[in-house]
Image (tube, rainbow over all chains, first blue to last red; front, side, top):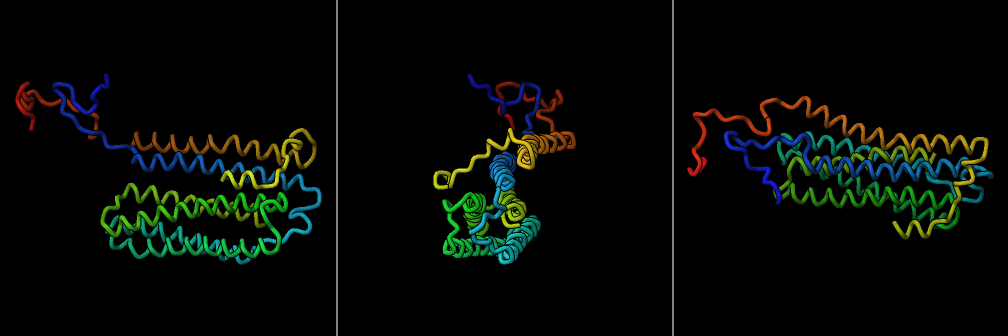
Length: 197
Length: 79
């Protein structure tokens, strides 16, 4: 029989304890740890294979990655994260104050994904595919997984934006959504450094 | 994700673990990195929760004794 933990014992006035962390935030923190390990595993595999490459890295005959244009794209992503941080600060004042920076942040994130897709088109045309070499495999696996996370996070941010418009957005769910986007933003420089440089 | 995994070209990382030279160093480095990363991240979360519990205000206990004068006799509705 389940014990009713919400009722107070006789002689005691019941008060619900304030949660140490909101459930959504704690759950997101553990999810991010798991996702970070996924990326760390990819990066570790990349480091080992790169060290094992006899003919140099990138392998001869493989197209070079667009380092400069992706660096600019990285700035868009970092700006998106910074603006979302600002939106979070403004949200504590009022929902209206957060709307504009929130929209701008999502737009910059979407721009990052679109530019990544454009970059992929060029690389595929030059012959870099998932099965062309281990170089291509690692590139699409690592960058593609990050892009999947970015798309998923942007989708969730759209949901949060809709809830903001309707006045349903709570600080807890906004905080959890921001955490996911910060993860997408902050892990990217490490991936860029490992894969592109 | 499954499509990506199945489509990718296979690479063999296992031989480097027993070999000498820079490959083995890469293996050792990543092994240490992969071993410590989850411990550090989970430790940071647990540490943060412990810190928050310790710094929580004391006026929010699970339940507090009610003075005898405020107690409601059994059978009467609680306000």
